Image (cartoon, rainbow over all chains, first blue to last red; front, side):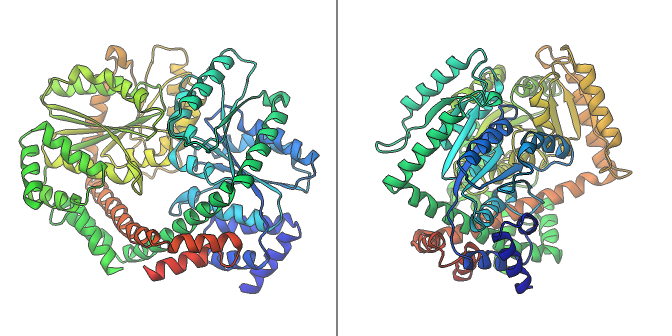
Length: 317
Length: 317
């Protein structure tokens, strides 16, 4: 087993896409050999990729923007890894995969690796496995790793927040889309992109965002103030400016030491997630032996309350 | 402390809205006395409310539908409790609370209790605290408890799925809204409501949903098949039909024993959530003493990998 893992890690490090895909499947499936994989990746040496999170409501143009960003980075001879994180749903798997077609123009470029990630029911879901997937791409020599998520829920927002630079995409005139986007998305943004900037309402959206940033009481002095960029990603408009803004944020992170702190925070978050999954697996095992079912039935008839039942479960684990 | 808790529980049981509000704040804040509250509520006797989950994308008319449902249930002399669960965001608190204005017509009815719930950063967030809030309303004598959530993420979908009957609201012609709604919402639906049924595209939406249900390979024989209802909630259109469909589902749950199983599953889920929060608090305590920070820094420089670090944390806890 261990030698298999080492072979895979070595092959992935030599830019073998199949080996890389296999390692990411192991992450997705929460494979029992995952701890060995992570240990082998660490042994292969730390290669720090620059990690960019890209999030936004459905329909704001995330895939198009990602594709335009890949093109620009490739002009700079950067190796680019993309993790496209989808909420799991048997009903929509097809539709969401369809979006990925927009990135197909990069399919034959061996220095671009694109992977759709879905959580398969493990605890913590996508939020738990994405940092591991990023580690795989980091250790195998990608210069830039872009994590694209649909910004619809707290978990997705958290994924975006695990990046070095978090980019939130909005579109003008989305009505409820913008309202939803505001729900948790703005707090995590280092950069805000108003995409589809040729549409009515783009100026108003930019102004609204700039006002929000200016009045943001939650930013301390010396903190980064989010930058607003206008883009028309379908025509690659504003992508230069977006990459410039990313570079500026990257330089700021490096010069202030904020980048280092962010990486430590990210690692702490990752360790906690894994630790929680380990503990949960312990409880899960006990649940298999019908103990949880007994306790649940007792809660329903009122012989014990849920807190007391949880205490029993924890103390027995 | 314990006597305070018993006083509160007693007052809430006598329909004292202030005491009820206090208990729900304790749930939201994950108050240290919460285990005592839950024990006292159990001691007060099990009163089973019928719990209805109502979810859908922003803008489909959840608040309007909720308000119309409350009116109908009040005609039947049911005591109605509503938990309106909002994703937390400092930016949108105001906007989302604005929606609640639509329910203000019930504000003076002492047999209606409406509460906005927000997670305040505790582990598991809203998903963890909502079942506890439902228990508070159950134990204090509400006939019907309606849990309204914005269906935007996995956590919100899970909240809806903790109900006896889960109603998913859709609106025709929402484009991406419907696509987003499909992401995880349809699997949890017992009833589907196409609201704003006077709009173009309503017939197509109903047909599309009925086709999806008919071809749904994931439903075993003898399982409930979701019912599609058309509504125009602003004019209370279709609300009678919705309540009829809820009653039909309720009768089905009772006659097949599926309702009992669902309640046990729900309790099991609740116990696991609390147990996980208890375990997480243990890890959290250790994190305070800088151990997690040390391990995170070691992961960043590559002297240990995140899995190994998590193992250290768990074994020390």
